Image: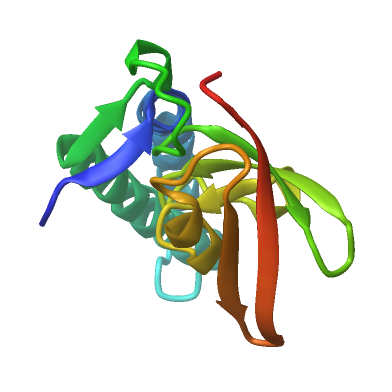
Length: 158
């Protein structure tokens, strides 16, 4: 597996989730399995089967997070030299030149992306078009609805 770019915030969120799964969720599931076993016949015990299924999901997520963290290339944008260019982790304000709509995005790793919170994946078309550009540059992004022209208004390293 190649290194996966991730912001410091994204890596910390994954570590928190991993800690929760290992220290809280896993013991809860183990208790549920033990309680279900005490009820007798496991073949027809819905609680037991449900707890075992939850255990499988939990263990799978633990493995997934551990793999991501072991291959993470954590980039702290605050430690980057502010060049004014759009880089991974930067917060970029843009204006759609067609609709005059203004938007601010932060470029993050795939696992951190959440369009509703304006966190866009480094692999998204708009992020790929923004990276390397600077304030006042105009870029053209191919979208499913056609080409869209954006002007970069501000680049911040927050």
